[in-house]
Image (cartoon, rainbow, N blue to C red; front, side, top):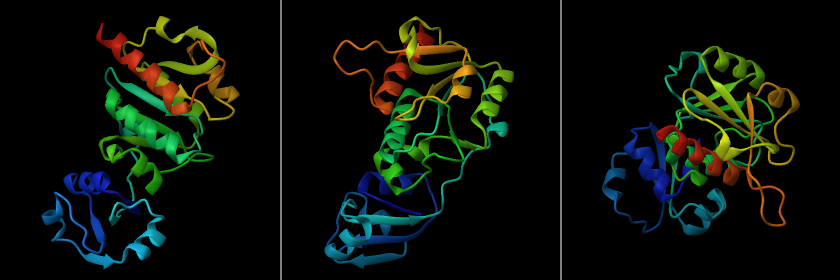
Length: 228
């Protein structure tokens, strides 16, 4: 898998993730340049780097091992905060949600196998490398995953335009917050298996928020609630 950008590269190095190759733009320099000398370095002209990495590389790209997903059934839940993504398709949204989850101290992110963006270079770059601090599980069926979480003592909070004000919900204990698809929101069966539906009331003319923004608002309300 290819990843690129200075912040991502430094995070990969600090996490001791296996690096197969390092691509550097001619005359590249950075604060952590000395850390690169032990790897297989390939120097490229700027035009070639721009073509290969679509101009978003900041002069450095790494070929690394594929991301290893977490097995949900081997994860130990204890007063855990989990985020489930109901078929998020935009890698920029996914990356932004990962970054927010890491900042909020989320223990696990759950995504479905099908009709969902997976970990790729855009997701990693948008997350600014915080992906490598997060546990992410990929499951065959979200409804089955919800049922499994409930057996572990979870309350499941979905997000939709019609529900309870998000700041009126108790997020203490094992809690799973579900973020729906960018266009269609949560699927019917996922919604039917939620214990609560959290709503962010709009004061302006727009009737909905970007998926990553809405997730961030509810997540940090949950963090505040869990500390009170």
